[in-house]
Image (cartoon, rainbow, N blue to C red):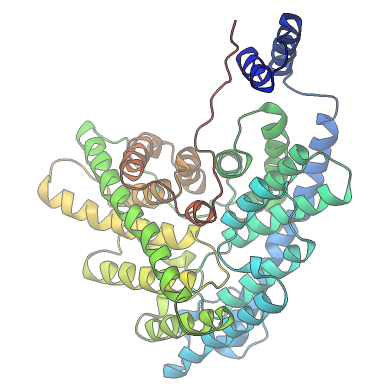
Amino acid sequence: MNNHEVEKASTTAGLPVSPSLGAAIEQANIKQHRTVLDRRSPFIILLSIGIAVLATPIAKGLLYLIRLITNIAFYGHFSGALTSPAGNHLGYWVIAVPVIGAVIVGIMARYGSKAIRGHGIPEAMEQILTNDSNIPIRITFLKPLSAAIAIGTGGPFGAEGPIIATGGALGSLIGQLIHVTPAERKTLLAAGAAAGMTAIFGSPISAVLLAIELLLFEFRPRSFIPVAFAAATAMALRPVFFGTGAMFAFSDIPVASQSALLAYALEGSVLGLCAVIIAKSVYVIEDLFEHLPIHWMWAPAVGAVAVGIIGVFSPDTLGVGYNMIDEILSGKFVGVALATFCFLKFLSWSIALGSGTSGGTLAPIFAIGGGIGVITGELLSNLFPTAGIDLRVAALVGMASCFAGASRAIFASIIFAFETTRQFNSLLPLLLSCSTSFFISALLMKNTIMTERLARRGHYVPSEYSAEGLNH
């Protein structure tokens, strides 16, 4: 509280205003702002490192569980080998697989915890904003299990959202078992989330930025330094569990010309518009499911029917689909085939997510955005053949710009695309396209795909960070 606020509150209450009291509060504020860290910071950093040590093998375990369920559900094999659902030979019986998984998730949500529904990040944000970052202990176990069942049975989701939510729940659990303040518990939650994301993608810097932009709601050293240590620890452990290669295979790209940069910026505006459509569509579908004359427990099964039907005609829409992101980033998956895949993936994912099942948003948005980026790049190449547009960069730009527009986590989006491909020459195209996408999204959409549900429940979600000036 600054001097002006002290005077206003005192006057309203009919109390005399003491100049010395206002001066004391001002000095306390100055001292607080100058205190970068406190004596408990080393303790919180050590806890964050410990959380990362636990979160990294948990991330590996989640991916193994998804693969195990995929092999059992689509091939009848008890194996944890990496397998895509697209190669199944079930024919029309494939429709039953996601339905069975959705029924199980619905039962888990009703009798376990309703909070396992959704993609995880908005639910973590809600606990931070309304419940002092106290995530129920059962979520730590139910969220990854429900996500593994939903994805393993063909749900068109990524594993990253659930593991971010699980890592956050683990951090919250540690913060509940050990006596810490709500602010410190929030830091531990964000540390767990960042560690989980780093373990999956090998993207420590973007994981820290995502935690700052979507979970911490502040830029303070005492908050982001423990998160940075957690992400660094997860990255150090990642070779043991996941290997050392980049998440997405990508050959070297040249420096973009000025005309190509202009084209990528234009592409960013297209993706910003698409991001708005994607975000709004999910909640329109969610509203439609809420009006169905059935108990919400059965809604995921209804959505899974659509997932299965689409999976019959486009098997590549089933499951995580990281292999399809690799295909899109290669620049060789183009034309009508790519446009059809993007539309069907969007339809399957938006219906499934809107039905209230458990699964992530990052991988589907990356696949859809990357595909739209390639299509846009093709159109711009035909209009401006001398611009030097690289379809691989167009895919990467589309992937990052779509997520930047949908989530408004602009810096995390830029650095994520760079870290997962390790292409330095992509940074400037990414900066321009993501900024353009953010601009279009902010003009056309009040909330984001992460905050719309919270806003509907009456929660205020900070969207800007600013320093509090002192009145003299």
